[in-house]
Structure formats: structure tokens, C-alpha cells
Length: 141
Image 1 (cartoon, rainbow, N blue to C red):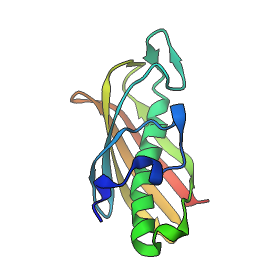
Image 2: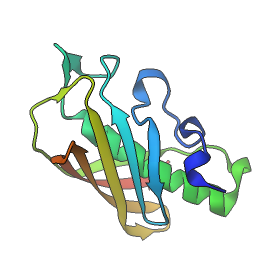
Image 3: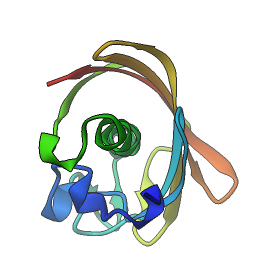
Image 4: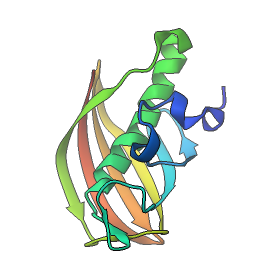
């Protein structure tokens, strides 16, 4: 199974304007890299830009891809989709807004894992500029 060939909609429960990530660039046991283009359809858009808060969701969805692929490898497709409840341990935004049309690269890494709990560190970049650094705590729903 090549994880990059699995449709994102098979890995995440998000649909329509809440499905933010568009492409899986890289995935391994502990980390995932995804890309997304900021759209005027995204939540929190105003005047041609988006609130940086959406980068928390980008990190959560990128981590969700990794956790879903892991679940598929262990339990198989019959297990169905499973969500994760995310808590934000920390979020540092280095941009006041994100321009519509910008490409964002999100990198997440499972820094701690125990049973159905994960602590995930994430970085979102715009071009080569770090736009946000985020730490999430995830529990299987």
C-alpha cells in the first residue's frame, strides 16, 4: 500500500470547505508532510486573506492522515474511519494572515504516542518562511 495514493477523503472525515489539505507529499511511521492552497472557500476568510488560526486545523488534518494510515495498516479498511479529538497545547503564529492563493506546507510528527493518545508537533511554512509552530494533543474518538 502506497500511502500517497490513498484518497485524502478515505483518511479524514472532513468534507467540502473543511477539508483543507489537498496533497500528501510524504508519510512515514511518525511524520507526514502535506500541502494546501489557501482558498477563499476556507473558514475564517475575509478580504482576500485567512486567519492564521486555520493552521491549527492544517496541523490536525496532517496528523490525522498519519494516524489514519497507521490505523489502516494495523486494523484494515473494514475498521472504518475514526476521528481524533484535538487539544491545542501550544500555537505560535508568525503571520497575521494568510493570503488567498498561497501554498502552505504542513509537517507534523508524532512526538509521543501511547495507546490512543498522541502528542503531535507541527510546522506550517509559506514559501520558506515558518508561518506557525503548533503542538497538538490527540485522543482517539
